[in-house]
Amino acid sequence: MCKEQNRTTEFGGLILLFFSILMLGYFISRNNFVEEIIFFGIAWIGFWLIHRKKNNSNLFRFGLLLRILLLISTPLLSQDYIRFLWDGYLTCEGINPLHFKPSELFHFIEGDDFSVSIYEKINNKEAYSTFFPLQQWTFYIAALTKSKLGGIIVLRVIIIAFDIASYFVLKNIFQRYAIDQNKLSLYWLNPLVILELTGNLHTEGIFICLLLTSLLSLSKMQDVRGGFFLALSFCSALYSLFFLPLLLLKGGKYRWSRFLIGFIPLSVLAFIPFIDYNQIGAYFSSIAQGMQSNKHDISLLRLIHTFGFKKLEFIYLFYYLFAGVIILIVSWKYRYRNRKVLFTGFTLIISITLIFSPSLKPVHAIILLALGLCTNLTFPLIWSGLAFLFYSYFDDSIPMRLKNSLAISTFLIVLIILYKDLKTLCEK
Image 1 (cartoon, rainbow, N blue to C red):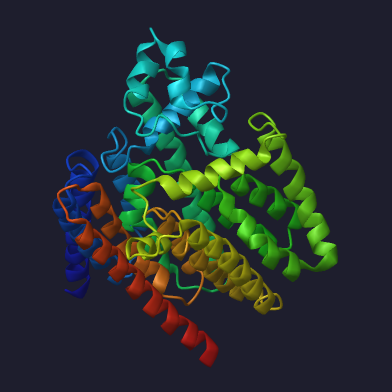
Image 2: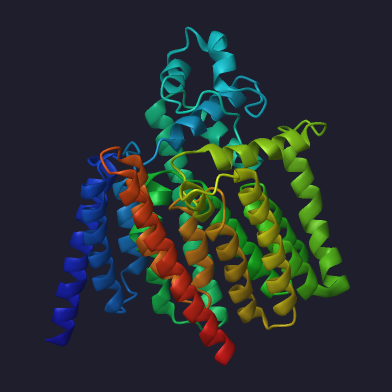
C-alpha cells in the first residue's frame, strides 16, 4: 500500500513538472511574469514531490524526458540564442565575431535570408560579443545548419549532452565522498536547471560540466588532467579564474606546476583564433561594459544605485576589490582543508562574486547549485528556487518599484540563509 502511494505521488509530481515545463517552454513568453511564476511554482511542487520520495530508480529517465520535451521549442524566456547564432554565422563566414558590432556588418549580410532574420532580432546591435572561445565554437557548429530551428536543435543537443555528463560526474563525486545520492534529483530535476540550460540554451551548462570534471580529476590527484579541464571551463566562462588561488595554495609547489602544465597551454591556444593579443585589455573591458550595461541583468550593486548612490564607477570598483579580497581570504582559509571541504570553499568564492556581480542572471544560480550540492550548504538550493523572480524585469507591465522589491527580497533571503550556513560551519 505504501509503495503504491509513493508511486502515485511520484507520478503526480512528474505530471505537474511535465505540464509546467511544457507551458514555459512552448507557450508563455518572458513578458508575462505572472503566468511564468505560477507555472514555475507548480513545477517546483512537482519537483519536490518527486524528490521527497527518494526513489532514484527512475530519476535519470525522468530528467532526460523533461529535456527531450523541449527539443524543438524556440526559447521564449531568453533571446540570447539569437546572438549565439549570429556569432556562429560570422565564424562560418570567416569573420571574427569579437571584432565587430552587428551594426557594422549589416551591409555584409544583405541578401542572406538566414543572417538577416537573425540580425533583425538582435537586442543590442551596438554591443561587441563577449563570449569565450569554447562558446564560439559551439555557436559555429550550430550555425552550420543555416537555419534558425536547426541551429536551436543543434545547440540544445550539445547542451543536453553536457548536462547528462554533469549528472554522471556529480554522481561520481557523491559516491567518492559518501554524499546522499538523493541530492542528485536536486540538480537533475530542478526546474531552473531544465529551463535555463535546455530551454533557454545557456552555455553555462557546458561550463558546469567541465568545471565539475576538473574538480573531480584534481580530487583524484590527476593534476594535468584537472588543469586541462579547468582550462576548457575557462574557455567557456571567466569564473574558473576565481578558483585558481585556492587550487594553487592547496596543491603546493609540486602539484601546481603539473596543474599549470594542463591549464596554461590550452587556455592560450584556445584564444588565439579569436583574440588580437594587442587588444586583450580592450576585450576584457568590453566584457565589463557589457556586464554593466545590460538592463535586464540585475545586481545588488545596481539596486544600490537606484536608491540614490550615483557614483557607478565607485560601486563597480568596490565590487572588483571586494571580490578579490574575499577570494583571497577564502582561499587562504581553505588551503589545508580536505578535498571534500574544498567544495565549500569553491561555493563560497563563487557565491560572493555572483551576489555582488554587476550582472546577475537566473542561470548563474545553477553554477552555485552544482557546487553547493557537494557541500552541507543550503542557500544554493534556495537561490535556485528564487532566481526566477528576476524574470519580472522582462515584464514592462510590472512597476519598477515592485521589480526592485522582489530582487531585494531575493538577495535578503539568500544572504540570511548564507549567514546561517556560515554560522553552522563555524560551530563545527
